[in-house]
Image (cartoon, rainbow, N blue to C red; front, side, top):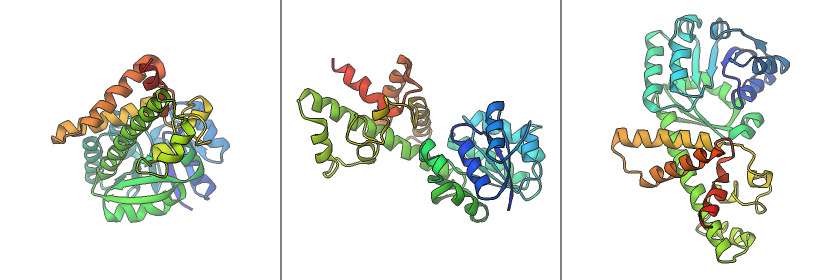
Length: 297
């Protein structure tokens, strides 16, 4: 049994921490929202009233935070992880943030004597609850070897992507593909509607032909063909449009910083920005089908 600190107990972090508890580990958690800390306590974890308390004495410290700014504060402030973690603790940030910040925080950890990984996830709330997340991990081989058994409690697929920051790089590239492909699938169904082609017929054909992709076969943006998709629950979010926009913005910022040409990624970001600005930021990202379909009216 390991002593674990977990900071950030929201829709993703809460279930992840609960899975560590279920596996028999001693998990102390902190979140700014008291109800989330209380939920962890009901799940068998221990509540903390601060980052410092959650970090103290832990062999492993996990964070799941909204953005790079919060990551830097939680780790680097006087009351943060670096100032309170035990010597030799392994630190794992599971937030999705920009590559530069991820590398900067890992470098700061190394100066303090800590091994640290950036390990963003894919799989959404369902994956967090079921312990089937994909972890994209950047950092040293030594840190990865130490953290991998813990990651396997929370995830099904664990990939060491290379040096610090490469986990974030993999995440934003993956989600740029996802955002672009969801728009492509949505546009195809919108066109099929105009052509009076039955949606199920399009699905049956495209899902076994060259148009096959995850956005079609696992997360179809129209009701009917994939019963488990959010489209059949009025687009109740598994992964919100706001989160997709955040990831596309990170990809576009990285493109500008590196001089990479990503015109489709840029356009996808613009479309999701328009969609969110219409008040749909909390809707599932596949709901952009309704936005694109309405644009044809």
